[in-house]
Amino acid sequence: MSVQGPDEGRDGIGPVALTEIERSALGAALRRGATRRELAQWLAAAGLGAVAATGTIRTAAAAVAATPKRGGAIRVAGEDTSTADTLDPARANNSTDYSRLFMFYNGLTVFDPHLVPRPELALSVESRDATVWTVKLRKDVHFHDGSPFTAADVVFSLSRLKDPKTGSVVIPLASQMKEIKATAPDEVRITLAAPNADLPSILAVYQFVIVKNGTTDFSKGMGTGPFICKRFTPGVRSIGIRNPNYFRSPKPYLDEVTFIGIPDETARINALLSGEIEIAVSINPRSARQVTSTKGYAVMETKAGEYTDLIMRLDLPHTGNPDFVMAMKYLQDRERIKSAIFLNYATIANDQPVDPTNPYYCAEVPQRPFDLDRAKFHLKKSGMANTTVPIVCSTAATGSVEMALLQQEAARKIGLNLDVRRVPANGYWSNYWLKSPIGYGNILPRPTANILLTLFFKSGAPWNESRWKDAKFDSLLRQSRAETDLAKRKEMYCEMQRMVSDHAGIGIPVFISELDAHATRVHGLHPVPTGDLMGYNFAQHVWLD
Figure 1 (tube, rainbow, N blue to C red):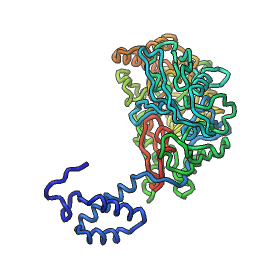
Figure 2: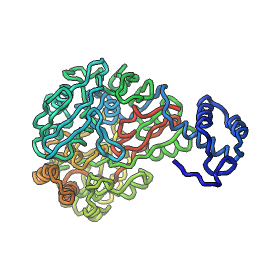
Figure 3: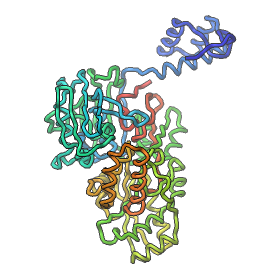
Figure 4: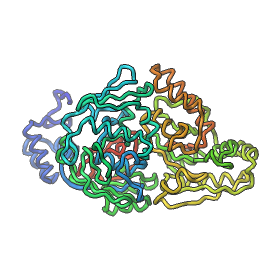
């Protein structure tokens, strides 16, 4: 709302005070496709001068463009695809899976743009001691087949995430739930094995979306989400059509969303600029320049905690040598990686996974420099000087090919031959990640430090990339969940970050900004720091002009 001064009126150049009827008529004319000349003539007849009319048309056009519209279909290309694509939340492990989960399902909570968990299927999530939590559920929600959403669905969905037979990738998080019990048709009680103040945030994680009680066939995407699964072919595409009974009416705005995977980034950009798709997920900075210089296209930047990390398996003889690991960390030219590979769409990192935007980021960990002398010292101690070591990379792990080549160039200077083996993006995550002695991961942002550290660094976690194990770290991780004194909690997280930086077989050179390209006629996108495309939850929020 603006306050008008005495000199601002119909013949001034400040805000123009049209009547409600005039504003409505102007908006209707814009939606019908009236030209600016026609509108200027109409406003002149209403008594506006040329300058005021131009400003009024511009303001009205922006307002009309910002008003969500119902209808239309979009095609979206993600960066990951394989025959392992899944609609089973427990097994989802890449950005394409996550985007589909949020199309077809809902969580009990959902993150807002400030990473605050807000109720979604839940009305409230409350606890007095951070151990016993009461979840009150919405009563106006139905699954896509018309059956009502109840507490039984929540108990089933959360319980299967704990079951090793399910193949859940979030067992380290879900196993904290000692008991999950329906206390009423619209109420669930979750009792944790130990206090954890982050439970509402855990419930907003991708894999914690709610499926229908008793589901065994997940290819149908039977959920409560904004879109109904019309078709799903792993490794090919999914098609979602608008759920007419969605509880968050008037959302979704689109009639249909087709999601495909195009692992090759150049092919994704070509598909976008040729009009084959409307959104290309996760593009590189060089492509960003190409997109923004093309009329009708734009790029959304999301600053978050994504990183592409160098992984050295500690459970193998040579790559597990601590001096070899340290030599590889000193060979990371962070400044060059930031400027040459990511064109400064990145922030310098320090082999610790918590990024500077996180309140628990530890700035006190001494920055590890690019240092050939120290790298050579540790390489000699490791006994691996003048040897050839294979290193696997792929365009599937953002920037890893370029990072591997820079690492190879630096390694030659200290007598280490890195044999860079570039492998296909298709199937990289199932065939190479977690399996190669030396390779790269690409870790998407996580909303809390505890979730991140639990999933990727806790001893025995399925996604513990370097197989690092440390009992003290595990103990600190458990203690931090229950610590309500924020200063003490930060001290714990700081110590854990030091331990990861010094001892885990992980090298993290930079934190990467998320860049998503889209046609400008797609509206409603805004950054959410849990990942690309509004934390992969874009589908219900966007509309077409």
